[in-house]
Amino acid sequence: MTRCSPAHCVSRLVACLGFAASLAASPAWADAEGDRDAAVAAAKQEATHWLEALDAGRHAESWEDAASVMKEGRNQQDWVRDVAGPRASLGKSLMREVDRAEFSTTVRGAPSGKYVTLRYLTQFANAPPVYETILLMLESEHWRIAGSSIERAPEPAPSIHWGAFRAELREALARKSIANLNYINRRQTLEKEIRAAHAKFKLAERDLSLYPEDTLKKFDENLQLNQRAYQEGQIDLSAAILFQNQVAEARLKYLEALSNYNLSLAELKFQAGIE
Picture 1 (tube, rainbow, N blue to C red):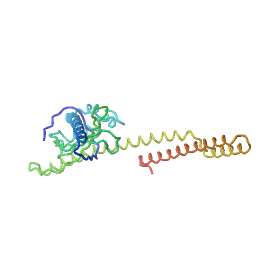
Picture 2 (tube, helix red, strand yellow):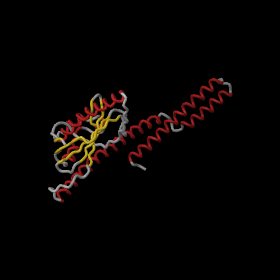
Picture 3 (cartoon, rainbow, N blue to C red):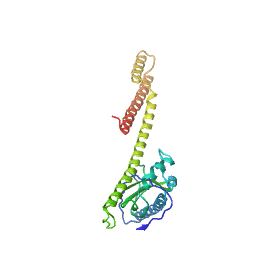
Picture 4 (cartoon, rainbow, N blue to C red):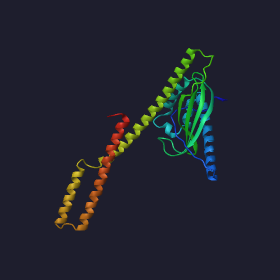
């Protein structure tokens, strides 16, 4: 393990999963592997810089290195408040090493792009060993922190220097800190999903408002008037057919707007937990 030095950036932690790749022995695959290695190395440098600043307590600085997805729905003051307290209770970072590094072009719940997932095995002063998982995304040609999470690492061998009470206290403090961080992450995810569902609903509501309540009835009435005009010789066959096609197209657009409204309303109720 390498000893961690205090320096530059902060943490917000989001669970991240998913990377699978198969390699062949051709030059093309070798080039792709080299690109992935370079991406992982660059992302690792940014993550180390970010975590060192977090260790040093300079939480506001990490805001500048966060990806845009991390900044949605909050400002810098909210970020510092949410991160500083739970993180501080873990105590000083004593040592940290990379346990796993993965490159991927897909992450669940996120658009396609370039992502690197780094998992660190970290020892804090007031907690047993934990895994810190950092998700980075390539944004405007720079690696940015897109999320992070903390979970307990496998139990190390019992230390003969710790009394039972001290070990239990540290474990309880670690569980509380991890629970606080995960709660903040989950709350922010839910808020983002609700905001997106609400925006989609408002757009569908606006589109539907362009049609009067008795739209279908008016369509039928207009078709009847068109048919009567044709029968009475007021319009020729081509004009009657053209009008019917226009009404049919307008009806389809109305039904599509109505369907989008109902679907977006159902989604909004689901995200908000309304039966």
